[in-house]
Amino acid sequence: MNTGPALVSILRQGSTLVASIHTALNDTEMVRFQQDLIRQIGEHRARGVIIDVAALDVLDSFASRTLRAVAEMARLRGASTVVVGIQPEVAYAMVELGTGGDALTTALDLEDGLALLADLGQSGPARG
Amino acid sequence: MTTARASDREGPTDAAEVEALIPVLRRVVRARVGSHPQAEDLVQETLARVLAARERIEPGMLEPYAIATARNVVASLWRQGDRAVRNAHRLFDPGRPDGADDVVIATEQTAAVGRALAQLSEDERRLLLAHEVTGQDTRSLAEAADSTAGAVAARLKRIRARLRVEYLLALDDVEPPSDRCRAVLVALSGADRRRQDELDTERHLLECPLCARLSEPLVERGPVRSDEAHVPIAEAADIVTARHRARELAARAGFDGVDLTLIATAVSEMARNIVRFADNGEVSVRLLDRPRRGIRVIVRDTGPGIPDVDRALQDGYSTDEGLGLGLPGARRLMDEFLVESSQGNGTTVKMTKWIKRG
Image 1 (spheres, each protein chain N blue to C red):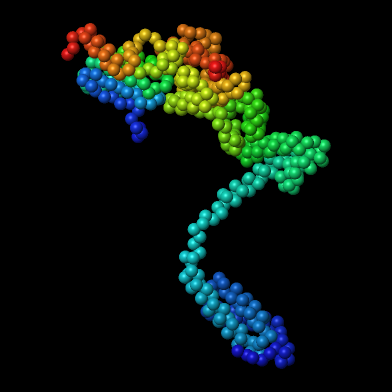
Image 2 (spheres, rainbow over the protein chains, first blue to last red):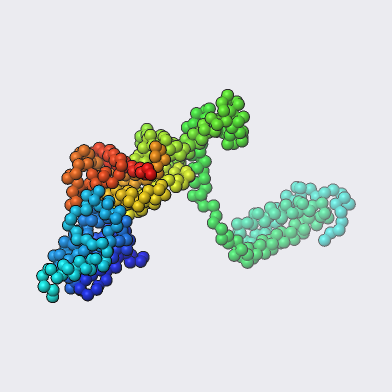
């Protein structure tokens, strides 16, 4: 169905999955991304998930809601989620739009995200 | 052959003598070709040749001459047949012949032009024909009508716009369902922006399938405008297209990064409403120059309409759970925000953002 370059990549680093969204996703693609990610958490026995949205110029209400849903599902599968790379304009727009709620754990960039996950792992339940 | 000249004879061979040869010639020809459909033609051909040559035929030699001619004519028929078979392949014409439908279409088009012209007033018709057919220039036409060349040119432009509409209607042999249809089509045909805005032609095109179809050639021939974009919205993928186009245009107008994101987000929210609630709609984006530089996004749909617009604009009615319309959020992203909606007649959201000074 999709023959172009990958819209999303999901890479594993230790017990962490790093999912990068490379381009604006439409709703269908967003939902597929969500399903892929949740499935891979089980496959790789991931304890942490980083979603990199640095390439996105817009996070509208649907996208924010989907990200929150991903984080919630990941939590139920035993993984913590950190969203990294929200651009300053996007952050501004999310607050104005009213979708900047506190349900998402975020970090500035990938480095901070990994550090945050490490902290969460230490303070959370014993690692397997 | 005979070398004697006709003038040496007692007189030219009589036509009646030639006619008398017919039964003999028929026998000769039939003996060779049987009941070939061209048998009678061959007889006539022979007679024609004999008549043409009768001045040169010696008296008494008429019958032998005619019989020899008949044999030659028959022989040449066979040769012709052979040649036709040999050359048949050359007759193949790789070009597309004028199909019967092409001819029919051309006829219909001519008739449609006639009917369209008949819709114009006598005066309009005379002016148009004087200019287009006779080639009279606008200046001389203006003098005759005690007017100015500019006014005549403008009038001609309006007449042509109407003629195009009448032609399309005549070609389709339809009468538009409402009074507005003609006005909308003429405004589109004349590329008259002010009139188009007055009539809200875009909404009409969403609602009236006939005008939507007929207007296609009218809109295509208009100048391609680089300061506006129209994106039809029918499925989720169109939302992304709409916000990209809006962003492109806004960037050209000179909006900064934050505003570009705000505009794109607002477009995304409103376009999503179309997909979720209405199935069919359009996002049109236009750059503004007055009173300041800015961008106006108009989102139209033919959905069920919003029962209580005031309530839909309140925070809280719109929730993040997918039940709300995102109107209050989008309103905060833009400078001006106007919702028109009535139940059963769809919704129009007009939102504007101005470039900040400084």
